[in-house]
Image (cartoon, rainbow over all chains, first blue to last red; front, side):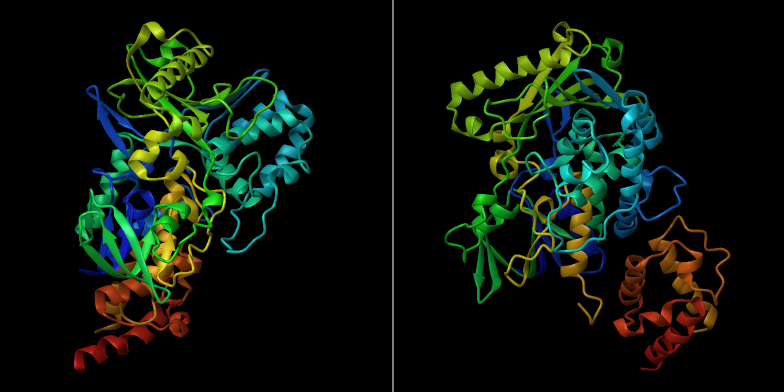
Length: 466
Length: 86
């Protein structure tokens, strides 16, 4: 069968790209290797509970009545022809960055963070206000801007290493594929997405967003095949000639958009013998644990929507030596968002950096034992912030880098992908492009923007008919 | 097609692209981008919707013609009426 566009992966970027293309009448097929859509932001059911895979927060909260320079969520609503009430995003109440000696609260009003900084770091407030002004507009999306070290730039505005690390902590977790530092353009995007616009969450979790995208896609004639993995991207004469599928058949396409990832896409290409992108494989992976409790976490002392924490003298954003680095992490309480209806479960989640190698190299008993050990350790770490949660746990689940790779195919379970992004999406094969994490933007909003941009640029031309 | 019909058609497209914009007071001789919150991506979508809904092609060099409602009417009417008589 021939399609105008085949999209590899039914995650947020693939689905958003599909919606754009199908809306304008392109014959599109999305192939997804998993049984369910969503990719890194999927969902599952276990022990009678429904869980979201990756969702702590949707960034870039758009407050009703906002007027001003175009912001990401407006772009998404317009480009995908979606009404805000369809995603039903509801804002956060508050979040915090908690290091040993300091806690900075922040909300969807940047002024709250500014007054926290003024109170805790009075010598730094002038520099911080200048930094906020510096980040006031999003950088223009340009392909080949050279890397600018955020740590170097921040040194021009701030002199307190604790404040610098505290400000970077949420941005790294939400997220940076690069260790220790990040490109300053990325810093601006994440600063605005997290501190200026802020967090929100759909009432029904990630399914709410996925259902809107899928319904729109299919209503516009988009086709999807699940349990259908691409086994080979056959390249001939510099063009994708066909896609060989795990279902035993092949499809052809004028254009292929791959959300599989940089290294992963290169692995599928028939014209790549030695994968020279392998050196760029993402090294930052995570474990994530979820606990269903018998009480509202707020009543147990957890009043943040999201807590980014670091214990110890230095905040290190790097692949740990040990299987899980419990000294830092993210704690999320979905029930603390300003939802119109209370959620049907009391849930608390914790994420920590993990060493992919130990998880992939472990044999089955080692894997289970290590997983159990670190879930318990994580619960203790979380409990340190308020009170022992152990007596309140009704159900526990967790996933490791291996879980992520198993279900999404992303190498090393590196959810933010490779530190080496292809900002143009161009692969060198004239009709094969990347979208999603390795094209440049991360998170739910980032992925949708990526899918939209790549679909617009490579799947839709305004010159001439389809 | 009358001028009013062309105007309505263009406003329908804009309403679809930017449902939160108040279109009741749009002045026909003032640039749309000066009255409404529309940027270049939105304009590209207007062009693509013209093709999708009405099979009308607008080459990139002609985008300028669509900057006001009056401009849209002047530019698009012949294209609609050309279709009708084809």
